Length: 457
Ligand code: PHE
Image (cartoon, rainbow, N blue to C red; front, side, top):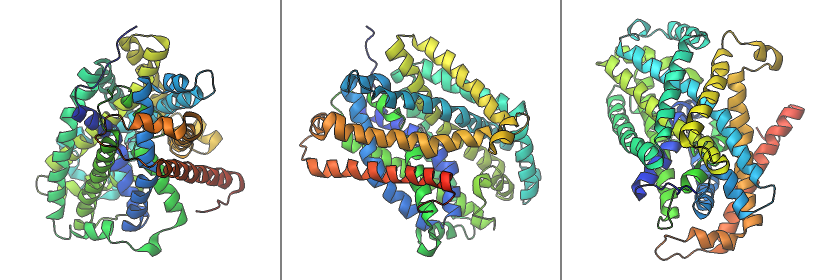
């Protein structure tokens, strides 16, 4: 049997796992969700969800991975042999296909926009959101251009993954994570020193609870899963490359802290710029690809800031995309005994092809839209963030509570901790609460779809 790969250092693991967490979710999704849902009020609910639901599940996934030294399918099978629990692992592998397909498309957009800004392509968009919107729509619905960038993005993802855990994932995230952080600090300073820039702080951190609706609570919870890469075994897979000397509680806290910090910093950098230029903070998903390109040309050195911003977004997307492809690759290595090369390139290519349909669903390939009333792209996003990840997360919590057992779980969790004082009841309550909250939200979504009226929202 092949020897299992391991991380080279504790720090390397923390950076790789935070690289998975920090991605388009933090820099693209969070700011526009906050912008549309009352700013600070949304931020507070989001933080509560991260702590209550996110923290136990991050630790839960790490422990399952480290204990079994296997990726999700093998991990569930090894703790619960000859049971149906391995299907939770399979669901994770399926989610990886679904998410990476559309994630790679947006990853391609980030590269194209970085390039466009570099060659001065934003200058004609200055202060003209209509034109920027039109150009964005023309770009994403084109049958060749976005696919070209998507293939480059997926190519980078495969190149990192084929180099393995220590020589690929760890090596690259150790460079990219600090780079992301430094660029964000620069962008934040740039934004806050623009006139009116500090309004962003008020917008993001001074809550007006009347703006908070039930549906934004649901949204915040779903986003907590997506942003922490939970519910599909990413953290099980990364945990499976750990040795027993890592303190998983402090690692999980670090990852959650960094993920949240970067989302907040991105929010400040983006909204400071938006407020300084009098643009609309509630512009929705187009906030980054439509509004920002109209603003950068009006700032001194705008082409450079624009390039830096989209390059940062590209790196954040890449460190997440690799963690998604690793779930698929590790499954074929662990369960099917494939070589890393074969698994990476074969399935990297398959996902890229599904992604091409996703990209084309915004243009030429719109049969899907006509039949199901939603584009293939939006469908994959919806399916994964509203169902697959929450269901995977809820089942993982139930698995720990009822199949593995809290005492067995804690016996493994405390390995690597200096003087663990763990209260079993508290851990049990945390998992029970996160499973129930998530279960309720899934039910709410199902009922909303069946009857048209959700229980809350
Ligand atoms: N956490 C990533 C982000 O916020 C997305 C992701 C989801 C990555 C699921 C891995 C698994 O963009």
